[in-house]
Amino acid sequence: MSRAPEIAFACPRCGRETVAGLDGSGRCPSCGAETALELPASVREDRVLERCPACASKQLYVQRDFNQKAGIAIVAVGAVLAPFTPYYSSLIAAALVDTALYAVLPEITVCYRCHAHFRGFARNPRHAAFDLHIAEQYDVKTPPQA
Image (cartoon, rainbow, N blue to C red; front, side, top):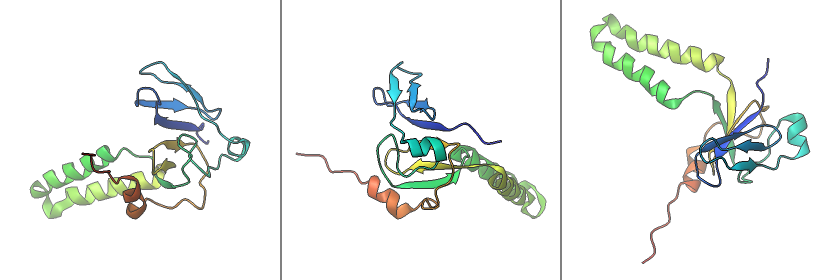
């Protein structure tokens, strides 16, 4: 069973996360602002993204739909327990849990520019895994003006 398409992006009014469906409309849970994203008919039919409907960027990547903080917590617990277990079995257990989660969790598409998340969409073969070089192009901070 495939998941209903969902777009999580920053509310244009308050900056908090808001969600829109395949029709592009939603309401911010924080400020109540109505949001509207323009999704081409091809995206609504095929569920394949060419560009981000929140910021129009073509720079998108795919990753597993897993909370990164939870992943770090799994590794941290394994590392903390390692000295107290024979042959570092807690690290092996943490690695097995991580591998199992990677195998079963679905992929999502993420925008490099605005960090919008797209769940329930088909994978576009032009979108690869996260690339630090591309991400750094969007994270460049401009120096303050004097």
